[in-house]
Length: 259
Image (cartoon, rainbow, N blue to C red):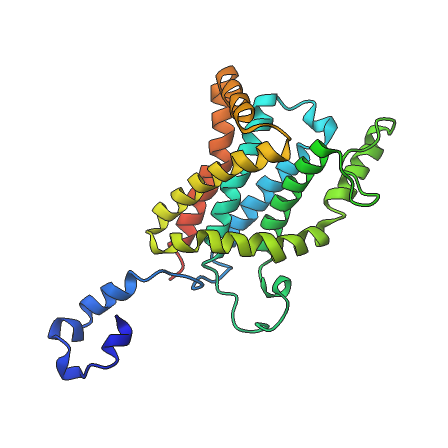
């Protein structure tokens, strides 16, 4: 539409358009992609990073033994919606043109963004490796049973915090580009609608991803979710909603401050 206007003389533009009213309205409806300063929504990504980091901590066996099964599943199911939501917000960030020729992992100029996506990746990797009993060389998220608690904690920390940079490279090189592509169509929607759709999309993907990560058939995994909700509906639903809706509301409020 704006390209067509470029070929029309001022005399050919209706007065109502020249006055700016309709033109501003049309521009306002264009998708706001890569227009937000990362500092504007930094509190959102800090909160999300803390949620993902706390979720990672629940995978430490000594902590996991004290967390109810319903909470473990609720935390697990909340990860993917939160991750897709973060992809929705991250796709609207403008990091500037400086360093555009650098590798992808160097273009993300926001520490909170890096922390949020990396801890999310660490959680998914930890669940997968613990379930499949895989190791990355000598690195294994599950410490030997013979180790005392302190040594077990250090072992787990080495896999998570100690492998932070490699996990960040994987998140920046693979995870973030996929999420940008996945959520890009949502930017044409109103902000709140796009965020809700991102949560729904993430929820659907999360069921499939974690069913696969835990070597569980989709039907069996869904049955486990139903059983967890029926066992303690307030706790399981409350944790899932807390993990997803609180960051959603914060992100939408912060986006409103972009101007």
